[in-house]
Image (cartoon, rainbow, N blue to C red; front, side):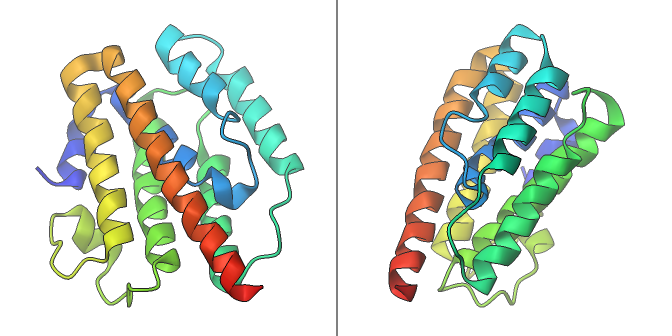
Amino acid sequence: MSLVELIAQADECGLAAGGLACLDRCVPLLGGDDEILRPLWASLADGADWARRLAEARGGLEAQAPDAASACEDEAAVLARAMLAAAPDDPSGDALRAWADTCSVGALQIHQLLDASDDGSAPVADRREGRTEDMSPLVAAELRRQITVLELLAEHGKGGLRPALEASTEGRRVLRAVVSRRARGRG
């Protein structure tokens, strides 16, 4: 099943986890530490305080200043900040579905921008619809993670949150390594 189909079929918990996981993987671009979004994950599990925890995460990430970056990383950071800004205060309804979709596209675009082996010739929309030939490794891994998160939540409901967070954490480590490697290349 394509990523687009999975998002279309996801329930509110799956959509919230899918959007949050995409944002969580992009935290290295925002200068945040690995725990900054953990309270939002807890909110999905306990169903409480999403709006307050989202406001705290926004405040924490706005206070962070990432190191000097390349133009490519600046563009990627703009996309990540847009994902954070678009997060709905209420994780339900049409706004949640739109946010999950926006985060999916944004995270794939970020990975495409940062992947030195990706020439950007295939639109992200094609990747989300299942056309994956000649896909670069970084983009392919991000696509797999997005699919995994949505499948975990579809299959296990809230019981899929922990493994979804683990998949997201691994993706964040990968992106952090890519950003670090690019910074060393500039230095």
